[in-house]
Amino acid sequence: MSAEIAGTGRRRVLLTGAGVISSIGTGAAEFAVALRAGRAGTGQITLFDTSGFQYARGHQVGDFDLSRWIHRTPLDQLGRASRFSVAASRMALEDAGVTEAGLRAKRGMVVVGTTDGEGHDLDQMVEASLHGGPESMGPEIARRAPAPRLSLSIAHEFELSDVEVFTLPTACAAGNYALGTGFDAVRSGEVDYALVGGADALCRKTFAGFYRLGLVASDECRPFDEERDGLLTGEGAGMMLLESEESALARGAHVYAEILGYGLNCDAHHPVSPEEDSVARCLRLALDNANVKPEEVDLISAHGTGTKTNDVTEARAIRQVYGDSPPPVIGIKSMIGHTMGAASALGAIAGALAIRHQFIPPTVNHRTTDPECAVDCVPNQAVDAEVRVVQNNALAFGGNNAVVILAAYERDARSGGDD
Image 1 (cartoon, helix red, strand yellow):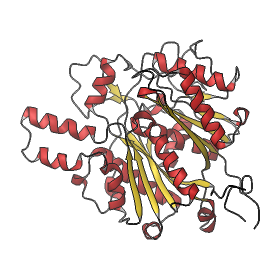
Image 2 (cartoon, rainbow, N blue to C red; image 1 turned 45 degrees about the horizontal axis):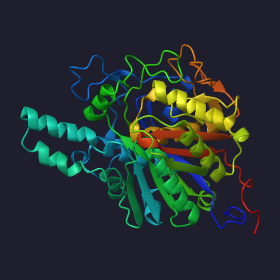
Image 3 (spheres, one colour; image 1 turned 135 degrees about the horizontal axis):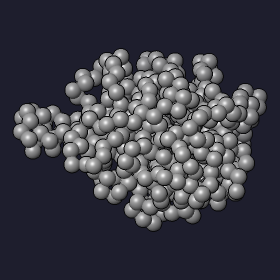
């Protein structure tokens, strides 16, 4: 049995482990249950001072036992986002059934996407300087604040040495960028595995920025809804273990999905407004790279921010590519908020869970679909469905688009057959 795609010399890439930290659940199993139930994790933000804002709801991660997931690194050496990335990585490894020793014996790559890095900790530094906090707080937080620590901390926690480490700051598309980077490295044989995803923590800077732009919803995020009035900022992490088909089969791993391909482009059309034709081009790039036809896609996990401009532009771009009857187009930000650099990583995991458990998560908080959007957003209730191919969209500021295609794994479907 060849582990390569016929005639290419490239290896097939499988997603075999997933770690999740979100406002609706911790761990892949809990996340799947929450997605099926249509649970929304909305509440008042308490991580930073919200006085002066007319409304300050968001998607904050609740308390959970970090010592269960972070063993070697003292917590006071990790910022909030790094805690999320490290904990979600250990969840992904345990989910995949991979030991630390097994990981250390192979060549690897760690890629974490982010928007704010340790923006939450930088908020704390500012607060300490303005309001006379402990003298040690500034230097202590400054040491753990650099964004590269989101990925470096993972390598340190698992004592990885034969590993390439990246932190990608490509804003709200960063999770998909990380996935694509790891996919290329595993497919080419450059590495044996890739631990990839995204992480961000709620921070005042980003909340205030979206608020000043008039993009923060007053109560709930309602993607594709006629009455939508914005996004809700969120936090969390989604980390995935990618490995070659040969590796996964050799150890009898369970497989969530196969990563088939991805597309990237950046049009720099506008600082905050997506451009329809550019988004459509990115969708086509991903489909072409994955060798998938539009009619083969069963589900689109949309960027779906709930803002006026994004949802109309994204829906029109989808219809450019898929015609008048696109597959279901869901917006999980209605449940988990906009988790910034973690958003498309969590979207990819949601797509993989939809494939594995054969259901379509809903777009919750929905009332009436905006006629300008004209998509089936699966309002409020999950549906059982045959889901074999999922497209996961990410549209970041500056026209920075990234789309990933996942599919149900079929052992003989795309390989070259027996040697």
